[in-house]
Length: 389
Image (cartoon, rainbow, N blue to C red; front, side, top):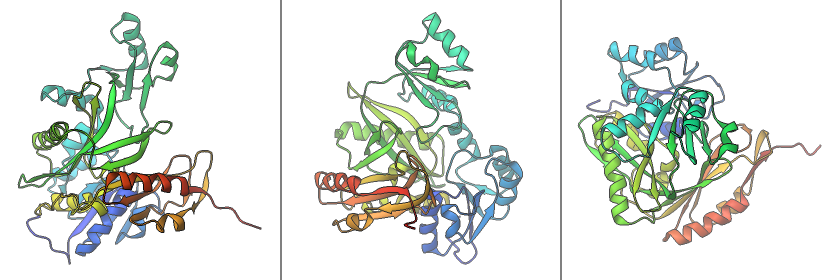
């Protein structure tokens, strides 16, 4: 789009989870007509979209017909029918990011080969077609412990990844096509997010630290700005900029990276969409990641990525051992703390470690934000609602 025509522009988002919901919240500021495709009539984004279309994101016909309803088509998750997106593109419909980029990123094997071909530092890897191929590689000494197995397709939010430390862990191997990586001695996990529009303008967000909840392999805390060195931060941002330029991508690209024990910055994987590691930008950066994604896919000037105030983001997850209609404990106490912003996604059912919302904690210092965030983590609980009679 060379200019934004808010009275007529129809934006379509494939999948109606929390990322789609937050994208729509920014789109509504520009009076954009919004369509969402999802198979759940109670999906978070469906409540605020101009129109919810019920359909499966992996079904060719559902995606194809949905794409024909809108002027610009994007997505909030990688697991989408690529053939339908390709067909829409071939017929002149605007699909952003490009289906070819999505296809590459959907497949972790192709991702790794892309890094290797372009001189981007990533953990050494090999591609395996089956569990039997992995076991054969171990037997022949081609695969050494410890290593990480990642399914080539379908895994995200900690799913589709297993760490194999010794022979006793081989029973945990996935059966499908996968990549095997050397296990990195990780000192820190970080994220760098870049945005690019059709003009080739690129803006990168400041690097953030990601602390993970081990059992769920989900982000526990996100810290902005990162505590890594200036040189490491520059390298992470340089990788994000290099990748988005090489792909000639329009939209938002989140690049997850490691800083290893030697201090080297290593690319882990990427996502062509708004990302959990960018939620803090809603309140702590001049332009949120969701607004930036819209600016990029509509070919508008990109917004400032300057930090307004240090922040810590914490995921609000369903309690382990509980499943049922969601009830939130500790919100009143948390909101009484200065600088706390609560975002609930509107998911009616809680289950163990399901992402139900997030809290952004703002403070004049990272240390102050961390102290408040730790307090909030003790306060907020998501459990099933129970009748008292």
